Length: 372
Ligand code: TRP
Image (cartoon, rainbow, N blue to C red; front, side, top):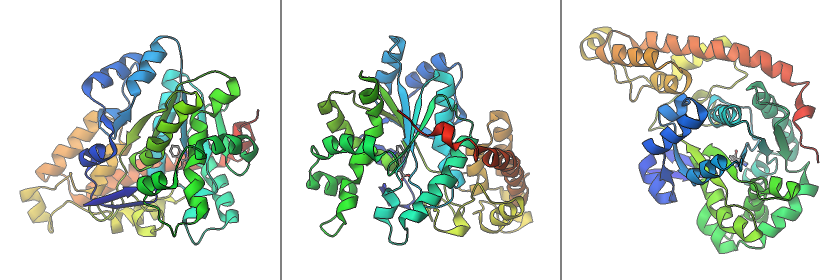
């Protein structure tokens, strides 16, 4: 059993079931071929079904073929430091920006987690907005084509548009889509109208209809399911989306479908040092290995439930390397500790560079802020 809403993800997630629940389409082989033809290659997140679902992606590609290019929209509600799971949709968004040479609007709804969590002040979310921005910039987005929207900073621009959305959504729709109740605070009821805005704001600003593609983790789908009904009524294209599954938490796939930022032992943060990464993986990463070395050599490990292997699916781009790791682990040739060592090395190599770029990003924030 799973539960997936934008504010809560629990249980062992059945993604096929979720697609049915949400009404999302699968990215099938034909669509993969279409993307490959245009992009020249397929990102390993597409090859490995990590981005697995979409709404109206064919529309985006049809328009692109006609020369009517799209823009990208994604976001992050600041509530804490960035962990590796957050990077997954952003890395993919960066790939799309490069391959299709398109603009990106990146929203930081700094009111969202203030409204939905008890323990966060607006000062906290402001601080994390800054911290999270460093991670986004560190991934290498093009500052000329990437625009940060911060809800409380860009309120003068966003609020009038949010009102137009809000007027067309009823309380009962929000209750049904998000599981809110009569006891929910009224800010949380309004919130989805702010998340809808960047999906058409560029069209408002440029005074012409521009197609929008939203890469996001599947839990955000309820927002866009609701806003897709409203945005055409305002005279703009229905936004399309492409959706990914979650990087599982260290504790294992059935413990926690999603890496939880609130539990130290399940997540690795972009600011963790090499020792911390090593310690967390060795201590907490759920192992699909056998109880003793002897038994492991005889029976082999199970990569399908092994978190170190599951994380390599996200972070080892080389298919041949990954296949070999899979086969060696399954046959018992590779031990659980050795598999973890491969992951630790991979992540620490990545994080070392990321942390340097993150430091350099401190001076670049202003270049990314949206200005009219
Ligand atoms: N609600 C998202 C979160 O909790 C933040 C967000 C805003 C977002 N706009 C988005 C995510 C668009 C994906 C796409 O982090």
